[in-house]
Length: 472
Image (tube, rainbow, N blue to C red; front, side, top):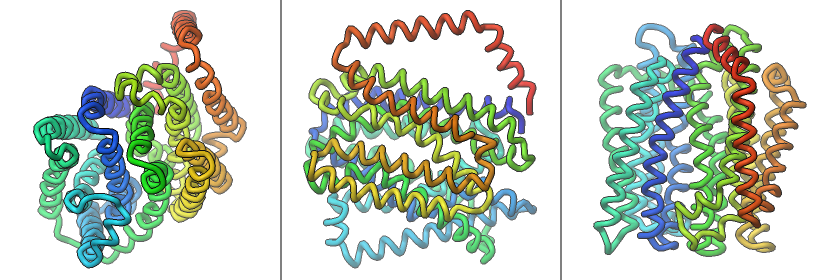
């Protein structure tokens, strides 16, 4: 695995993600205008519950593939491991579905969703893990073109179908939005289930134990991370209204400009990171991670500067209220870069239970602070509660991973500089949002500085990329 291949795979994942999100951002202004604020908020609640329950039902089997490939490296062993893992995931989903059939009123009160939507959600929870596992297997084999292309085509088609159904189903636009968004993934999941079971029917106790040993702690870790992102909307839905949820939803959508970059790069980064850890090449990891981290920080700053324009495009003037919480949510991209790095390091050393403990602690704290904050200061308080909890999570991870060698990847002084600069962006952004003239002058000045730097350091920049291509 060479750095050149990392750059290639990173390019394809990033390009595909941005092309896919281009479709999302093209359709989103339409959805925010044809759906009421209540319906738009309810779709966001559905999406948050779906993402949360997927972590539980999916057992994060696709996240274990990166590590399992080293322990199931015999002929056909990895295929058998995947079959075993998917069987266990389907079993967990089936148990939860039976619980729903036995106690439907409990789910109604908890999810605050119509049962039709809950049934669609369970179909998605049952089938999506196979599609995600296929994508994970493609990535560890560095078949990045097929993985990236399939993700783009499927997501683009699902958004087009969702848009078409939402426009045509005037009596129930929310159903059209949900059904169109998820039905193609359900069909793809069924196909890949059949494909994996055709390759191997071998279900082993060793594989099932391995999934529980690595995957179950990851469930709690990712569940905590998801709750950090989604509990805001759920708490506001229970304590306030769907309209105020819509303000959170639009800011989450804006923050995806940064998050898609982070997720795309993490997708390419993880296999390369594990390979470099395998040969103890910490120098290459630190060098690439500094470029990665500061690229995300500066990209975040650029997105924050044009936040008002993004909100106007995606939602219109009716959503300008969300401008006051936008910078906080966009910063989640920077924090995701850090926490995902720590989690990957812990998973490589087979210590995922620590990530589970840390994220569960931060998630519980976040829910408590959300409830208290909404009661005292209103719905805006939830974003600052999330910010504080993510800082707590980063501190817990860093302290534990000191003995796993994180200082060789990210020295503490560099971590504090990155965090300090990121936090300063919040008051700077809120000040600049008060005057478009000053903000546009800052955008122009920064653009000129970036262009001047690129011209003055042209040779050095070219030399860096040449060295990256030659290094391994």
